[in-house]
Length: 185
Image (cartoon, rainbow, N blue to C red; front, side, top):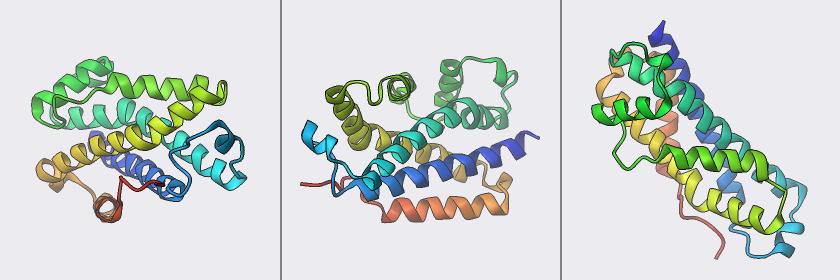
């Protein structure tokens, strides 16, 4: 059962990350935003890409923290995983080398909450928050996922289902072909 959850959660988080990369790619011509006027003159299509980035970041952050992390730790043999707080789960992942010591999940959570509660309330703050998401946090969360998936590939690959391996390959291909630094000049 835990192995099924792990495979499902890998595929789920990969799908969110691929949508983030797609949205970022579509946004490179108009991000980062530089003025209130630019923000107010966004087309419906541009707003769709921003919304997708925001939504998928929130989903990825939630699903990594509530599902993937716990599935990974459970498959490492840790007991009572699903009753432990997220910071304890992250510390276990650090102990096993699944993620590095620099992972700051609390900041990811704060950004996620800011997007959920402040998005479109104050234009200047929204621009700052959306630019921060685009230039920094959307990249950082995918780097964390990449680190976890690399650990899984090295240490748990024999437990990964064929369809999950296909998703992993697609993820790595997309990551290889993505340029995180692309943005308008």
